[in-house]
Image (cartoon, rainbow, N blue to C red; front, side, top):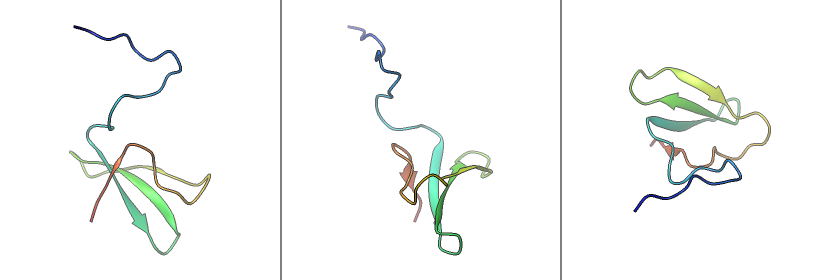
Length: 57
């Protein structure tokens, strides 16, 4: 049985094809595309990690 999408624009589950890594020099989290390896976004609003994106080791 299918489910309806959330009304408040939230996600269900993890973000696919993305990973994040912490840059200790700038103290920010950086989001990467897992397939191409390109850097997509840097978290500058606060120093916490992105929500729902897996962390690289």
